[in-house]
Image (tube, rainbow, N blue to C red; front, top):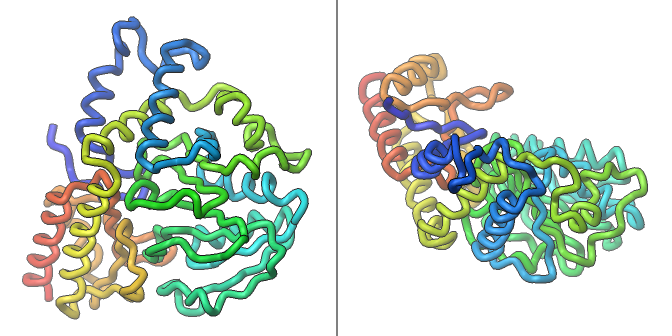
Length: 360
């Protein structure tokens, strides 16, 4: 079997060594005689998988003891509701920065539970930039300020956490978690679906500061109540066990790569190579402000958009797949998460140069 280079935005490519280990353990995990998919979620065997995953996550992100690390169902979209439900009982007023489709969805969901103040928006600029912090406007008594650290569709990424003083900072890091070092102490809540940088779809990481737990609205669904989940070690109900296992394998892989600082260096090289081939000619176009270009998701267009289908067809013939842009905006997009190898990016860059030579 010949694997291709998968540039899909998520579920995304996984490290080959992770897939091989999962393959080797599919029928039987560690001489238990059963697969992880058959394992009881309260068994000592599964408990060991859970415990090691949390140990590795805490080590990789340097998560302080004053924070809970939860592993929950519902994806990032579930957290669009869980955050205001858990943090907005006493202050049902929230501030959001609108930098793309996913922050827009978070805003719409939060508006069901309280007053949303859009502190800043780049909608009028087609989500090609992040408004300067000096232009943000929101009340000082909001329950929290929420931002989407990386927008997969528009391809903008915060290069550092915004300064918000004493306001609780909440970040959706679904598409750039563990791709660059962060200081967890700057945040009240960090959440991230696993299916882009940390494994397969079905499980979501929530890192939440202890003092923010225990204040949920009475009508909060149990599975989204941070206190109830923390009390049950994220096993309030039957969890997505196999996704938890896959997440654990990818965390082990990240450690084998040298940790997040080492992975970030590779991510920077990959992004620089791809943006260079776009910028060095007028054949390819990227409209995002260079100061906030995403390292994870690189959207681009052809100057002659009638060539897009030919690009996609020929790219597939070269083993380069899932390069179509998001359905609502078209164009092309290469998602180059942690597990996308530098070799894969080199292959894409070489193809792009050759395609320009023959079609430009």
